[in-house]
Length: 387
Ligand SMILES: Cc1ncc(COP(=O)(O)O)c(C=O)c1O
Image (tube, rainbow, N blue to C red):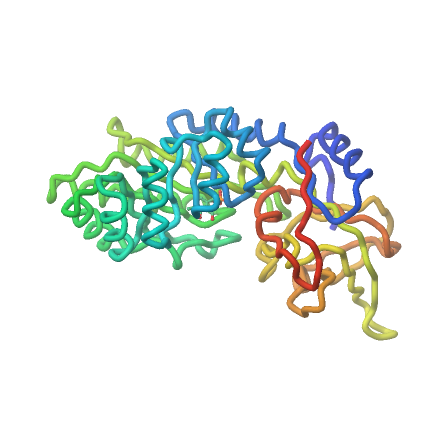
């Protein structure tokens, strides 16, 4: 397959990143902050009624935190370490949600002492910890959703609980002196099926109604998580279409009584802003007559490309070399045989590709730097630059 730059970046943006990249030694990611700024504005325009909580795990770089802080974003935080980082950039606790349902009691206390008052939960043990360590806090319960087959990077199963359990937890939250605030879900990252939001919102509506009618609890918020698309090889609908459809689902179920809506985008805000640049280490064949070539690069699963696990995320790969294409297996530089990025999905690269040539991995701004190992086989973590 051949990748067209224009399908992924405006020419001027690509030229700017490429010129910067030409001066650096591989491997690294270069990220265009103007693209992130535009993606944030597009999201706000598409969902004018929603509050944005950037999922810091997608890329915790200070440059991105500061940019989104100044644009008025809130932050979805997964750990005390992310909390310290974001707060030291001057973000106040009222702009933070502790979105990880798996947390230690002492970490809940740490957040509470820092002033955070909004907590996700999906189990009784965690809820009881929150009641003790963060008395009176707002809690929202994460529910399980469908959609694991249509999301490229599914998240449900590990997180969330059944609606029946969510009802029990929210009733218990009230008994424990907490503020039963709302419901959250995450339909899976890079979710290509928009209808999955419809089913999730219908479950939320059921929970809102039941609690109001039978338990006198009025929930106030829906946190619809992330799942919005980035541009990879497998195309998706555009954000506008997602927004129109999801807004329609909300209106159908909640009409004039629309609760507070939170979104927690990670990938869709950051991914398209980045290009990961790597160098071909070797091109090899396994026998004299083997048709398939192996292309080994200086990045791999352990240096930022872990989302190629099970070939889940198919990054577009571009090279300056032109000419006849042939199928390749693409693998990383470490002495670990799991370090193969693509073997089953057939990538084509030019036959004249050789050691020292550069490969440009498009849409790699999210979930690359933060996933990179610190010293596997001695390789340093993936470098990143923000322009
Ligand atoms: C709680 C939570 N919110 C939001 C996100 C961001 O999702 P996405 O990158 O699909 O936008 C994640 C991703 O793992 C998450 O765990």
